[in-house]
Image 1 (cartoon, rainbow, N blue to C red):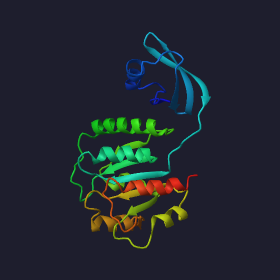
Image 2 (cartoon, one colour):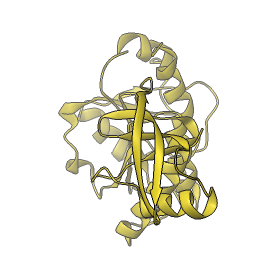
Image 3 (cartoon, rainbow, N blue to C red):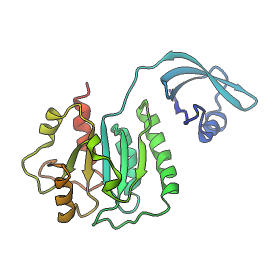
Image 4 (tube, rainbow, N blue to C red):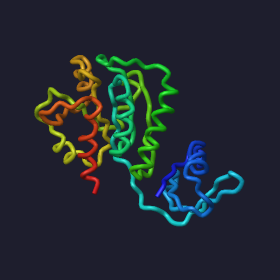
Length: 227
């Protein structure tokens, strides 16, 4: 069944109005799933003269995100699109992009990029039946975050002791911030800075994953303790 998310004003996005009227060509009383500030509901559409409203039928079981925020070193090219889509599918609560020393891409035109990434995320959230949309943002430096709000993890290819399984057992319900480097990994100066600020280095195993894939096993591990 089709799922739609409401905007901050608890109204349909304009793109969804177009989808309802011109792509799906739904009629009055068509059942859809609608998610807003108060949760997700099975609803019946009401369409009158191209105006769309809805009538709630019943509540739908909640599918909340994980308490995991991904802090991703800014990658190059369209890898950012893949990261947003897959991190949404794997239930990240928030996705933050930040340039790091080995980032090739640069921050520019961020407002336009955020709008595009939000569209990618919204489509993935509808597909995966999430109850909420992840927050997507750019920051220019780590100091823009209040690290005291998180248990900070650093995905570190040099780490050999702290494993992902150990972390999920030790911090199953913490508000997690997972730092992932860009292509080429994290610079030694950055690594020391993160650790000095309280980040706990962890290893995903012997296999070194490309930057755009590193969040997947981490989110999957925390998802496994959700049930």
